[in-house]
Length: 282
Image 1 (cartoon, rainbow, N blue to C red):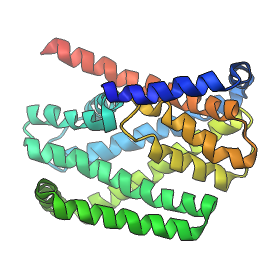
Image 2: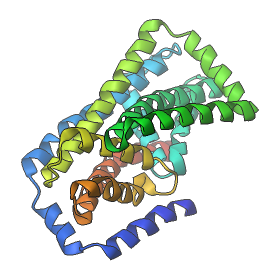
Image 3: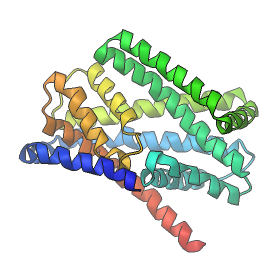
């Protein structure tokens, strides 16, 4: 948990060096209509990811209800929020073991879900880099990313065994399941980007949509670094840097980061309630 203090410290430094009066002004004078409108894609993102998780669990032969899948997914989101690198999401495998899913298969399901997210956001990130910095940099990042992944798998034998487990697991899936999972992942991320863009518009960030979405995408990737709770600090710093070429002042960029952080934490709190209830029943 101490590693997350890096992000908290970064956030404190940012607050110390910006005009907090302007920050509060941007937050208090936002467009409430757009703010409430953003709740639609925000909720849709969670619903689509819940359905994806529901499909994955049912592929093991178990038949949880959609509400049960929602509770487990929400619990995983909460555990991921309070742990470095969202490693707490692997806790869902523990709950799956209680309904008869082998631990290795449960972990593989969680990692397969995370892998689908990683592939989509990585490709979107490359497009974002191309929009903001040039397509030669996008191609370079793509090559470096593929090379790094290959190198890690060649070095780490445990990852190779895990990859074999994932391969065996996906081999049992029907093509319809894999297609559904990929489609749900793409649409879920589209909802996420629309949500963040509407938040940006609600507080007066009026730059064109392509660079705005590109900045949000790259920020989303950087906020996954395991040095901050729910991207606190890293998201703020990334938005300040990426939006500054478009004359967006730091207090306005931080206002967007705070809105995103607050909504994510409030949403993960639902999973926290489910987790507490589960712990009490044990």
